[in-house]
Amino acid sequence: MIVEMQEDGGVDQKQAIAALGALAQETRLALFRLLVTSGPEGLPAGAIAARLGVLPSSLSFHLQQLVHAGLITQRRSSRQLIYSAEYGKMNALLAYLTENCCGRDAIWGPVCDPAAGCADAAPNTTAA
Image (cartoon, rainbow, N blue to C red; front, top):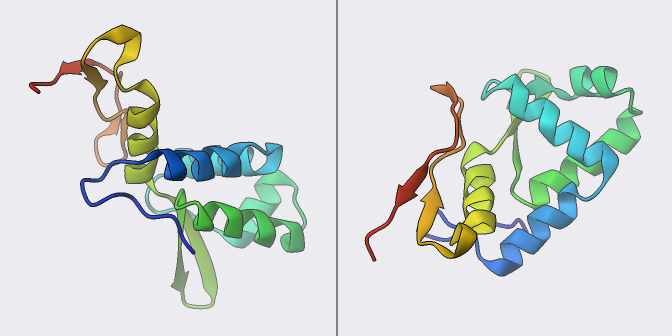
């Protein structure tokens, strides 16, 4: 079962636990960070293995854990599998973690929009 965002684009507690659990491993965290910096075009599995120094068999396991958690996507391009970060899920997870930060009704806006480049997080007040 692949973890999906809620209809409103948010993340619930169960989804947050799955995503954080997937990231709670050294290779997967490095892999996810690499894909975030690679942008929406992503990277082929071979390039990921080379950059991280991970054996392809081990990499396949780690990639599937992140796909299962909904943090990355996989697509085929010719004979290669291309992996990219799921920025919507990443931003939704960050929003879930920082919801009501410091006891205020502030939601920190999108932290990373690959189309616009990464921006400083700025608080947006919400009207309840």
